[in-house]
Every structure is written in C-alpha cells, then in structure tokens.
Image (cartoon, rainbow, N blue to C red; front, side, top):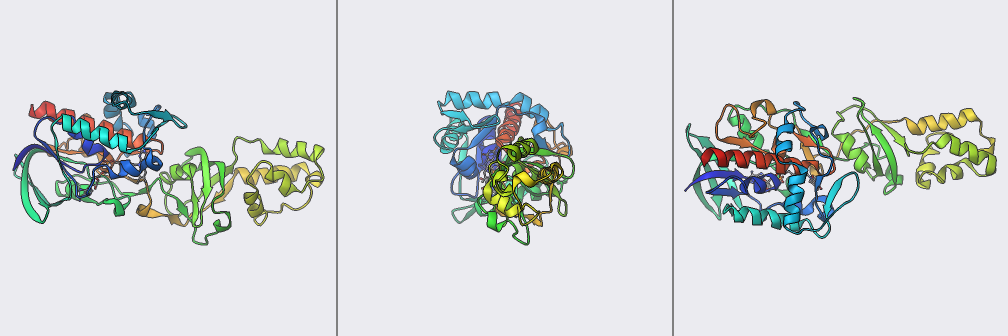
Length: 395
Ligand SMILES: Cc1cc2nc3c(=O)[nH]c(=O)nc-3n(C[C@H](O)[C@H](O)[C@H](O)COP(=O)(O)OP(=O)(O)OC[C@H]3O[C@@H](n4cnc5c(N)ncnc54)[C@H](O)[C@@H]3O)c2cc1C
C-alpha cells in the first residue's frame, strides 16, 4: 500500500498534523484509542493551551527553536478552532485554559478535523521496521496479526516521549532519529514529583501550601506545593523538577507572598500569650507548623520571642533547603525533557535537514513546555508546521 504521508502516533501532535498534511494521509498507533494522554490530561478536562504562551515557556538546548512554529500556529489559532467546534472552556489560573465538560471534546474535535481532511486512522497497529530507499519510506506494520508494508513519501514521527509507559509511551522516536543519523539529547522525566529516601514528609501527606521553589540555576516558580507520602508534589514542585538535576538542592520559601515577620511581631503585641506554634498556624497549615517544630525551636509564647528569633524563624521559612533523593520517574512524569536534537530539524517545518521527507513533532522533539497547557500548544504548533509543509511539498 502506498500513501503520501504516514504519521506514526495518534496523540495530540499526530492528530493535528493529519488535519493539515493533505490527501492520502494515514495515521497509525499501537493503542486501541487515539489521544489517550489528552483524555487523562488536566484531571479529565485537558489544559489545552495557555493564553500567555511564548517560546520562553519552553526548555530546549536551542531556546529559539520553538519561536517560528508557535508564531505560525499560536494559542489564538487553537482557541479559534475550539470555538468553531463550540467546545465550552474557561481560564482556570495563570492563563491556563481547560474544557468545561471533558477532554474527550478535544479528541472528538481533532478526529473530526482529521476526517474532514480525509486522513485515515489505523489503531492497534505496531511499527516493526522503518527504512528509506532514498525516495520512499517503507514501514513494516503489524495489525490484527497481519504484517504488511506501507510506503510513504513523507514520514512524520509523532510517537511522543517516554513518560507513562503504561499508556503506550515508547522510545520509538529516538530509535528512528538515531537510525537516520539524527542526534538525540539526554532525556529525563520532567513535570514529576520529588521523592525523599527517608520519606520525611509522610506525616504531612496531603498538606498543601503556597510556595516559591527555586532550583540551583536560579529558576523560581510561585505556585502550590503538596506534601506526599514519598516526597513533594504540586505545581511549584512539578515545574521545578524540569530544572533540577540529580544531587542538587532546591530552596523552598513557604507562603512567599506573606510578610510573616511583621505579622508575628503584631501578634506579639496583641496576642502575646498565644503559643508561637498557634500564632504561626494562623498563617501556615497547622500540620506544617507541627512538623517544623521538630526541625527548629518553636517553643514558648509569641509574646516572649525576641525580634531576632522571629527574624531567624522567618529566614528559615524563606530559605528551606531540601535535597530530593530522586523523582517518581517516567511512571508518573507528565513529560520527557530532551529528545530529538533541534539542530537536525528545520524550525519552520520540523523536517530533518539531512533526510528530506522525515519529520519529528510534539514531545519527541527536544522542546519541553512548562506545566500549564504549553506542552499541548507545542503539539498543535509543531503538528501544524509539519502538516502544512508536507501539503505544500506534495501538493
Ligand atoms: C497525566 C498527564 C497529564 C497531562 N496534562 C497536560 C495538560 O493538561 N496540558 C498540557 O499541555 N500537557 C499535558 N500533558 C503533557 C501532554 O500530554 C503531552 O505533552 C502531549 O500529549 C504530547 O503529545 P504527542 O502527540 O507528542 O505525544 P503523545 O500524546 O504521547 O502521543 C504519542 C502517541 O504515539 C503512540 N505511540 C508511542 N509509541 C508507539 C509505537 N512504538 N508504535 C505505535 N504508536 C506509538 C502512543 O500510543 C500515543 O498515542 C500531560 C501528560 C500527562 C502524562
């Protein structure tokens, strides 16, 4: 069988590319349903983009690479598509847009766009082998127990990264890149909770607090932090994990927007007979205060505490240094950091510079977004870049 375009992977990027790639496009996926990560994303409501998306919200060895694709298919283009399909949405926080009803609305929309473009979808289809004869790609596929070869003029690799293998993630994109001589940068789990080998936060599991989490390179995120049985999670920690390396510390400022020292000094005047832990518990989660009383001296009444001691306590709360022993890994990571090196790809089309007709899009590429809808926006933008370039090339 011969097609113009074969897209490997029916996730966010592959479905988007299929809507633009032109006639005779086939999308294959080894899963039994398309867009499985879309379905589970955003707690089932899919944080499908971010109003504030710019290239500064992405991590890549080349921080400029994402600019062109993001400019040519922006968050406004995707919002326009969502509106044309009458999918209700709302802004939750920090520019993050979510479906009002269900992430399944986004999958249905992408499927209908793809079908309108007459692209075909084969599910339960595994990739056995990929080769190139200098003109056509030959991809051996197995489907329903039968093995066959599809020949394609363009091959789009949209098989994502390594995160959540239970949901079908494989390293296929990196294998294909390596096979065709493209470099792959080091990959590691990102947007992932931290673990601590001593499980020291177990007594606090389930407690959340606003926090500013700063990694050793000086990157900071002000969002919620959550204590878990095995360590730390919540948006501030997930964001920081993308900038953290094994063995490094992170610095946590608890309740960073609160000027705690003057508040405690006022309480000393008005409520001097309150225990210091009770006074702190008015501003911080009481379970956290209990925990901290095991780490530092919080005994006595607030009225008996000197300015110097209040300042010292507040200094510790603003610069709490923690050394994670690791992360929860690909099992729970929302994304894979790193991937197909952008040096080998055109930033306009996502085509491999050395292999005409071969494209890499989405999470497979060394472009990783922050938490907040940026990763899907990269899938939409890079999918559009490859799809429209193929349509223009193959006519
Ligand atoms: C729990 C969770 C929640 C998330 N929430 C959000 C969110 O709200 N907002 C956001 O922006 N991002 C979110 N993300 C990240 C987002 O899901 C990904 O960045 C995005 O799905 C990447 O799109 P993709 O098309 O490149 O890859 P994927 O969506 O991973 O699609 C890859 C496809 O390729 C298929 N595939 C893989 N290997 C093979 C193979 N060997 N043969 C055949 N098929 C193969 C897979 O089955 C899959 O369908 C979340 C991720 C997770 C895990």
